[in-house]
Amino acid sequence: MELAALIVVSVLIGALILLVSVAVGKRKGEINEKTEQREDTVVEENEDKAPLSKKQRQQQRPRKERTQQHTFSHPLLASSLKSHSGNVTCLDFSSNGKYLASCADDRTVRIWSTKDFLERDHRCLRANVELDHATLVRFSPDSRAFITWLANGETIRVFKMSKKEDGSFSFKAAPEDFPQKHKGNVINIGIAETGKFIMTASTDTTILIWDLKGDMLASINTNQMTNSYAAISPCGRFVASCGFTPDVKVWEVCFGKSGEFREVVRAFDLKGHSAGVYSFAFSNDSRRMVTVSKDGTWKLWDTDVEYKKQQDPYLLRTVQCQVSEGSRIALSPDARVAAVSSGCNVALFSTATGELEEELHGVHSEEITDLKFDINSRFLVCSGDRAIRVFHNTPGYRAAIQDMQAMLKKASNEAMRQRLQQQIQEAQSALDSVFSTSKD
Image (tube, rainbow, N blue to C red; front, side, top):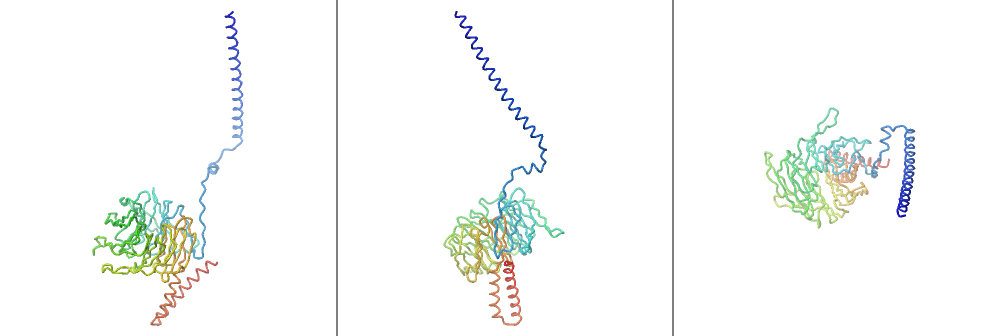
């Protein structure tokens, strides 16, 4: 009896297992059939479609959205130089006035012809910075070379410019870069107009003086907590720096009669601001300086002094202005106009009266990184985004006309009066042409 019951239970379990197996197999078949149908459909669709060409495959790739170029217009805007694909960080005019150099984080240095500033097309020559990008650029005194500061390499690289038969240039980097010496971020570089030395300055209060071959001549500790700016005077004698402290310190780099380096000596200080100094600039003859400070003022100084006789610079003027962290100041070579940047804006002042002559709002989409007058005081250029803005220096024209009119009243002979009258007419004509062009 027990045996019969055991047999019945075994039969029932076997039947149950068989039913489950059949059900699972049927389900798998349905799944496979659906999968095959989908594969057949995909194959049919692919057969109907023609194979994509290389151009079509490229068009199907996701495109990176290009940032919109900042638009700006103003009656004084002479031109916008647009060839860089990255933000422009530094500008420099050659001493012969023919070229403007610009560098950007697009790994290029561009050389522009200043005679094309008023043309419709602005051609430029490109020098590639291999495996790095330049944050600073400066022309050599003979305008046949330029130096750059490398962002990643943290050193100076020299490029020589060779003129081709067609009038353009080829660029060749020197075989070796300068040795790495700075520990802080470098904020400026320069070459003395005398061709005797190169300067590099970093935020950690260090200024280094080099010869043109890359050998270090001297190290200066500015003792200003941090450096915000440093530069060489146009005469090539002095190096100056400013920073956290409310003064500008100036040193003379001394050489012997035979050209050998001797020493760096403290020359004079510009004292008068009540807060840290952001930036400063020299006139072309180094007899005037301007400074801009966190205290919301810019100052004009007479630096034509005999410092070896303990003569201090004279403060000529203090003017209220808008400032922001990193404000820049530029002084026209003839010392008639001062330009101050604040964020994306630029203000132009008369140095003779301190009056605000022009305001330029929203010049760039980002904070202004550099501000320069050309050597003839005709143009003001600035950078901040991918474009370089070139402005007519109309305050400079007006100031020049006023100065010549004052000289005309004091002219002692007819030849001088005729010459001044002609110069006044030429300056007035240039000023009128700026505004007539802007109206058109």
